[in-house]
Length: 326
Figure 1 (cartoon, rainbow, N blue to C red):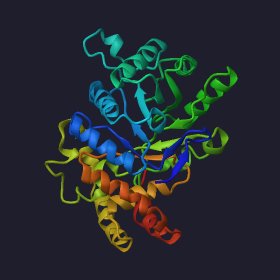
Figure 2 (figure 1 turned 30 degrees about the horizontal axis):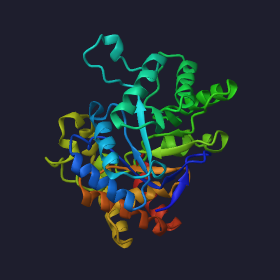
Figure 3 (figure 1 turned 60 degrees about the vertical axis):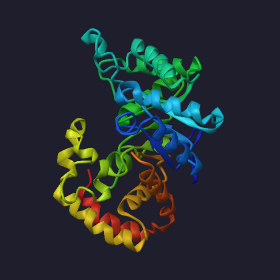
Figure 4 (figure 1 turned 180 degrees about the vertical axis):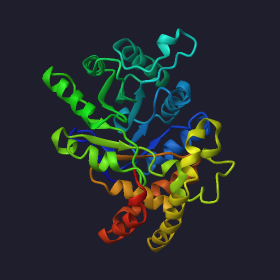
């Protein structure tokens, strides 16, 4: 495992990281969480991603319990979480509206700290943009959370380049803690934002990336080429919004063609796809997910494929997938 700086910050994250979306609490129980965190850590992973909204807070609770059981020195691992949707399903509707206002953020961090059982969280994200809250209010709140010692770094997730730049400039102007990272979706079929829209920001403001969904929610494993398996993520009721994309005929055909490339590199298509995302030098860490240990181990083995992705191989991969990418 190699490590990269999170943008222009001094924080170094493992090239592959482990996330908890969909899996923790829903597919992974406490024992499995401990087992997979330990396996990832032993493989060199130091960054573990979460979000307040994952499993309605249960994902943070589960990860926090696993971290306490593993008793790692706090200096040796990095934990992140994300805020936007909130968790109050019983209160007034106005308190459930997606927001990044100051009241929500200052209470959200305390809730996450309690669920994790941590004194601070290394990295916090604004999980989506909020057009209804003044950007300066959000930037000041995120900066204040850091000034209070409740988090160390902050960033955004699925924000536009213009909004990220505006947030950074606001922080610069008012001497606040600046956003250092964006967490976008990035895989062979979803590239434009990372490769084009954000391109000026890597040098302009030192933006780092922790990208998610390197396997396109499983499409790039090849498991959906014959339809949606009943035991797959795509078959879960809460994941119904993914179904149409997972059945995309052209993309599934391209995955079939990638199998020949993967075979020549002595890896699976999934490992090829993960390694391809790591190959981008602007990506600080690629967040992987797994519902069982064998799947995690296979994903982590993708790190050994990165050096096999020569310019010629990358060109072949582009020839099969670039025209189908958004």
